[in-house]
Length: 268
Length: 303
Image 1 (cartoon, rainbow over the protein chains, first blue to last red):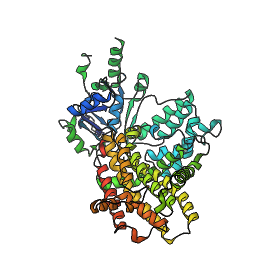
Image 2: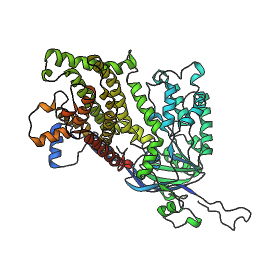
Image 3: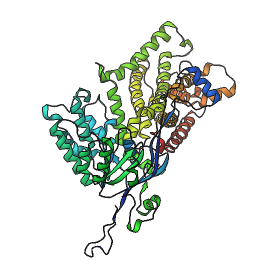
Image 4: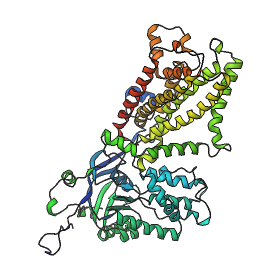
């Protein structure tokens, strides 16, 4: 339960005001997917559709988030759980302002960011250029990137086995590429940070290092959202958990309570 | 599932002074803003300016990545226009002998083709710039106008390689003229025009995905109306059509380039007010395209 500290409770301490950082108000997200659907894909059927002004059956609407409402406060670490396709990642992207809302609204303090730069990187370029490109894509300045460049490369450990950073990323093993991507993404600190599952990649040593880095980022950030299927990592990092199912908010509360209910549900 | 749904949102209801406030009121009280809302035009321009290094880095990266798998690598930047010129020389110069009425026909033709290709490719790349980069749009935050601008810069960089080749051919064929410095303002104006057009089509292409299929036909029609392959002054049309052909932006930019580089094209055979039109098109389409693109800023990324 949300116990707002009252003045009378403890005369010695100043009341800690709960400052909201993210407010999600009756949010609906709808994707429109073209060329899916079971409709006949023939040219004549498309033509008759245009003539009769019917909507293409191949445009399908996916209602990914249905009326979610919650408020996140400063200093909270919130876990998002739910089965595959329950709308967790979509919700994160909507909070980041990357997906437009169909109905409802998301209010945020500053610009929330998703941890990840994969989409901006290019496999045909060297690791070196990808570090710079990724940093710029995340909105870092050139000086900032220059000053953190060594740090990023060292953290990734790409150069531990020779000068790999000057080779195109397509020549990297999948583990090496994942390590570099994480290192670039984790180089910037954010006010509201959102982390999508399967972050800690690579070997055991790198996993430990990246978990450590996430803890650091958490300290720097005001509010953290974590999407994960690993209940242990949610228990370790989050003090509040939101359970989504089929795009609806099923439960929102303290970690132990929600995870217990979630595990009970999944055992059935 | 019905057993747990009774527990819904025990934390979400804030107690204390904020009790009873609607989410919108709460947001207003703490100065939270709508996530992903469209910034004002001045703010948008500021954001775009702060991302200028990203725009340049992104276009250079795309351009570099284009030829990394070819053995000759970046040499193709120059080889492609050179081979294009060779093909035109072979077909139009040696086989068909078309340009008898036009002096320096091969140079005349190459200028037309390169200038038209610049607009054509910028339009095509612009149309796909949002639709093909949904991954990027959905993962990271940046002013979306970065994409159509980047893709136009890529085309400009490719055109610059073509122009170097062309300048070489022109200088080889006939001695240099002072007018060739006019190449720079002409290219600058065409770049602004193309960027505006790319932004208009980026917005259209993001909403109506069929645009990319339709554009080649529109562009081909436009090509024949722009005098790329023949001298547009030589065809016989009614005066209203003549005016239309003369103010056609691509024809204007091609005229300027031919005037700058070819001795045989004198200022007296250029249509009236050609620089005025070149500037006018750049300002109207450049600014208009930017504002039109910005108007839908918050909508890009929906599939």
